[in-house]
Length: 197
Image 1 (cartoon, rainbow, N blue to C red):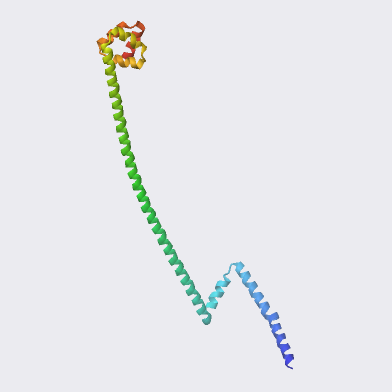
Image 2: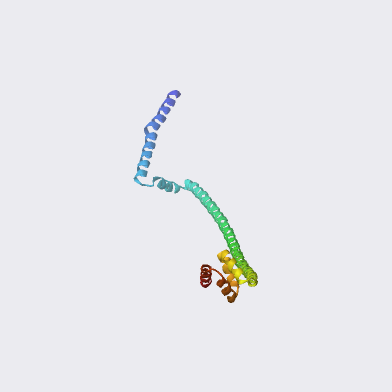
């Protein structure tokens, strides 16, 4: 007799699963899907309803506490990251400031060197001019001691710049004597060159 009851109980359990449990679960799943697609927050409503049950309420509070703790940890990490970034920005700003100072110092050095170069170029130009004047005087003395006839023969054969340098280093009387001893073409040429200076 016992076997028969076991069969019957087994049959009732099967009947319960096939006739009640599985169709109810299927229907609930289908309703949740349809409502979710329609835009209702079924899971949120279910969660808030279940959270009001006293025993389940403590479980949700623990979950919320863990969520709050996790959020606090994230905020703390975010603040630490922010502090690190601010420190890095400060270091970079200090570095930029130091580099700007270096650039300013280098610009002043470049300016100073440019002034020195300009001064040296000026001195070099003055030395060159002094040397040319000295040469001019020396050549002038040479031609000063030379007869005007001999000078009139040599000067037309020199380069034009050299000839002008010699003629400008002599006094007017000597230049007139030398030009008078030159050929007419050469005298005209050097007279025009002397006038153009």
